[in-house]
Image 1 (cartoon, helix red, strand yellow):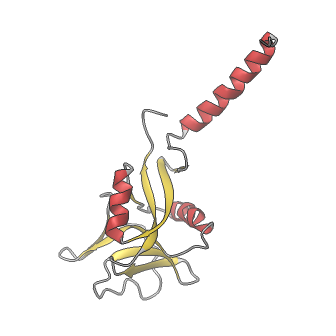
Image 2 (cartoon, rainbow, N blue to C red; image 1 turned 90 degrees about the vertical axis):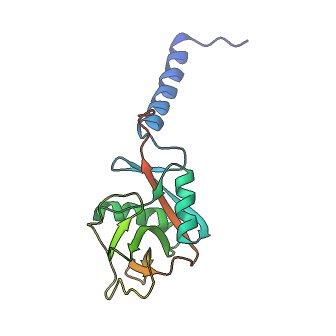
Length: 158
């Protein structure tokens, strides 16, 4: 058995406590990033928009909604390690209402559409990183893309 001086135990404890508090303060699961009271994760597996939304729901969230340029930049950072590949987020066109909606039910006010988009033609789901401008494009929902999920941070953790 090795005995360490008390101050070493205290230093180890404080180091662990700081690390624990830091990880827990964001309220996000491991692998998710925290931004503006929400947790985000990039999902590299290619799926249809509907499959991607169901996958996000299975993790307690939805495909990401975007409410500001800063949020969009944060999502862009998540996709940057994957060469900014075209990626699903939570926008979907409600044909009968003729409006774009977020799958999480939040208001659809901020947009970053490419010129000439949305173009319609039964393209009812929103992909990001379209063209070198990295803007938004409406696309057929059955095409397969990676995705970004978002959920509220856990109130139990932080």
